[in-house]
Length: 330
Image 1 (cartoon, rainbow, N blue to C red):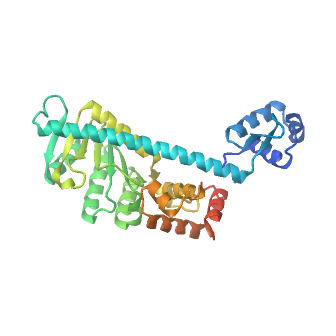
Image 2: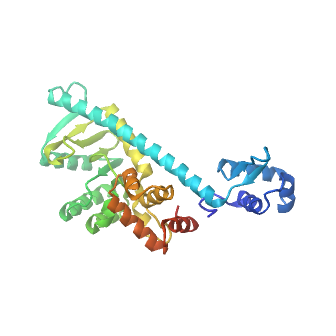
């Protein structure tokens, strides 16, 4: 339990002592633990920052240790607040970029793509494929991709992996973000594993913006119509749009789960999406409200929770939260 609360070293020692001896003063704790008063005060500052100490209502100025279960609940609530804030930031950036891309498309349709807007319209899937091949051949530093849509076709994945291998051999960094659902599709998950085995990086998240390919932080391909990518793509080179797309990718990458996170469940235990679900359930959310927060269906939420409880051997959701914390899974 203390591991998930970030307790180790002297702060952990002081916290354990205070749980047993709430009445001890700083000097008494120092003598009891054979530590200096400065060490005790530093540890108390750490405990206070983690909300594991509170001021007594009966004796103002006197601090007492908070029960670790209460501390865990408050920590999970704080994590959830940070997660919601981060998701909102990403959503705000996505809205802003969508507006910028729409304005760029209007300029292109209006016949003014050559006025410095840095936009080229590629009509049809073949035109897009040819441009992607050119960009892959010319890439010198990075290729960053949003891969929404879940499971991919086998032939497309085989061709993509062959192309990725060629790019990686030239020393180019490849980072791809897919949906969490690809972990349930053998072919797509094998492709992602093949990419990481060859030196690329692959992460997943619950939801993604439309498909996007960024090359060398200077060129971006986004679909003309996110619903029907076969209509073609817009090729952007304008610095403003590129900077915004790079920022969106990096923000999404930061909250995504590395591919290998679920390959060793005994060591890591939970995917980021499962961890978020457990945090929400611990806060009293229903399957429906948890699913809404994570942008998944209630059925998927229930299936994920059942899987977590089975792995932990837990008979209730509360017991699952406690066991996950004890294992350091949260």
